[in-house]
Image (cartoon, rainbow, N blue to C red; front, side):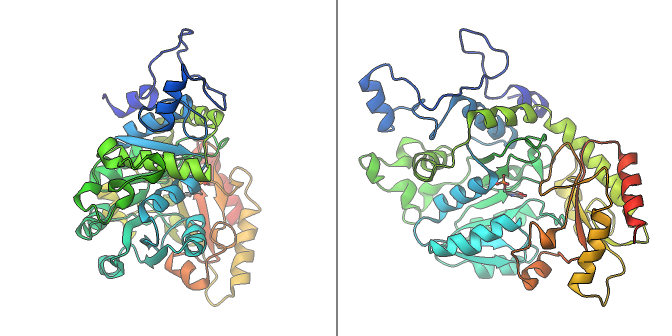
Length: 433
Ligand SMILES: Cc1ncc(COP(=O)(O)O)c(C=O)c1O
C-alpha cells in the first residue's frame, strides 16, 4: 500500500463507525459485548478473532498495530504497554522454556537488566557479544539458542549494526534476528528489508515524538518460517493445550502465528496491555514521524559537526561524521539520515577518576538551559542524559566499556528547537569547563 508518508497517516484505519470519525477514535472500554454466547465461545477458543477484553486487544490499539506493521513492511504487530514489555514478550515467546538468546553488548540499559537479571531468574540463558564481531555471534550460538537480538542503531554511542550480516548468521543457525529499531525508526531504516525477522520499538520515543505516553510494539516481518523446523518451535507447531490442542502454525500460518502467541499467552497472562488512550496518543505522533525525524537528524548532524571542533570535547559519537567507525555502515543502512540520538565525551578527563569525570559532566549538564536533563529520547524537546549514572548505571565497568560509555559521556537527543539555540546553549555550558 502506498508510500511511507501516506501509510503513517492512513494505514490501519477505515472510517467504520456510524459517527464517521475521521480520526481513529479512542475505544476507552475494558471489555466488549458479544452478540451471542456462541460468538463469545468462538472468540474465547480462538476459532474467530475479534474484540473480547482490552487486556488482549482493543480497536484503537489495532489501528496502531496495523500502522506500525505497515511502516516496517511487516505482516502483523502487537502493541503493548512499553518498549520494555515489547522486548520481554518477544523474547519470552521465542525462547520458550529454557531457551537461550545471543544479544549485543551495545543495548539500552533496561534491556540489559531484563536479559541478565529477570531472564536469568526464568532460566533463559543470554550471551552478550560485541555486535561488530561476526565470529563472536557465531561462537555464542548453542543448540538452545532461539533468537539473536540487537539494536539497529545503539544508544548512546550510535553504533550502526550490520543488520544483513547478523541476519545471515541467525538464519544459518536456524533462528530469527530480532531488532530493536527504536532509535533507527522505520523512516530511516527498516530492518526487515535487510533480513531481520521481528522488529521491536519503544513507541514512547520517536513513534510518539511528544513524550507524553509509554508504549511498545513488536512487528512480525512475515519471513521467519517456524514450520521449517517444527521440533525447535513447539510453541508454534505443537498442540496449544489451553486452546484444545490447536496448532497456531496451522490456524494462523506464516506472519500471523507469532502475534497470536504473544497476545493469547504473554500479553494475556502477564498483562502488559497498552491503554487505548496511549495507543491513540502514539497514533497522533506517528502521523508526523518522517517530518520530525528528518528535521531532528539534520539538527543532530549540525550539532555534532560543531562539537567536533570544540576544544572542550574529546570525541563525538555520531556516525554521520566522516571518520566515525560506523560511518560506512551509516551510508549503507541510513541513506535518509542518521538518528538524532548521539553522544560526546568531554575532554580533560585523561588520568582523572570516574568521580572527577562525572563532576565535569555535571558542570556542563547542569548549565544547559534549552536542552533538558531527562531520561528519554526521541522527544520534540532536546534531551540530555548522563548514561553512566542514569540509563546505564546498572552495568558494571566492563559492560560500560564494552558499550563505549565512560563517565565523561553525555547523551544528546536532538529535538525540534532551532539548532542555533541548541548550539548556543551547548557553547555556554561547555564554557563552564
Ligand atoms: C532502545 C530502547 N529500547 C527499549 C526501551 C524501553 O522502552 P520503554 O521505556 O518504552 O519501556 C528504551 C527506553 O529507553 C530504549 O531506548
